[in-house]
Length: 189
Ligand code: HEC
Image (cartoon, rainbow, N blue to C red; front, side, top):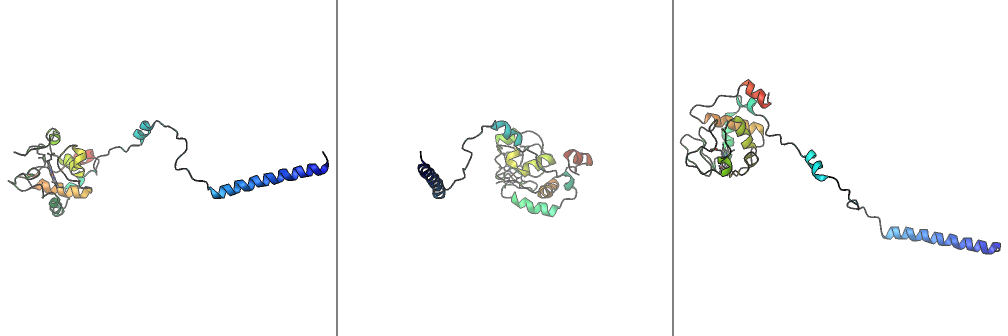
């Protein structure tokens, strides 16, 4: 092979390579790279265990016992307007959509005479002490799943404390306020 032919061959080779590179560049411009929405291959993880570990622990309502003694009864009475479409708090009050609530603090649950409770509440068991009222009024349907009380709950601990303190005095003889030991046991201060 003479030198000229070799050169020609080399030039042709070079030209072909350039053409190829240009072609790739053009293709890249015309078909831009797309980010994949997700990995094209999905790595299977034992999802249940991961989720279980990451799931938030149900912490229950914030403590309120420490707030009861100094609660604002006027604010509590105002908050009771959120309940009065369904409940009467006064002595001798009748059952409405919900049961009558006079004397409710420390009363056994589901004990209003002549009221048709849901099976969920009727079978729950226990008394309406400060802690169960706190939990129920924070998230009624979480505390007693299946209750027919259609109320979203009072998010603010202070609101619950004010309302429960007011409910406490809507009674023949108001229940004792929590002791320092009760407060410590609840985790308040
Ligand atoms: C939309 C109506 C409605 C509203 C508003 C409502 N409740 Fe109720 N409540 C009910 C019903 C209905 C029940 C009975 C639940 C069941 O049987 O599951 C109930 C049950 C209760 C009980 C249990 C009584 C018992 O005898 O065991 C308490 C305590 C209570 N409600 C307090 C409140 C308070 C406090 C508020 C306001 C912050 C409130 N509810 C708002 C309808 C309502």
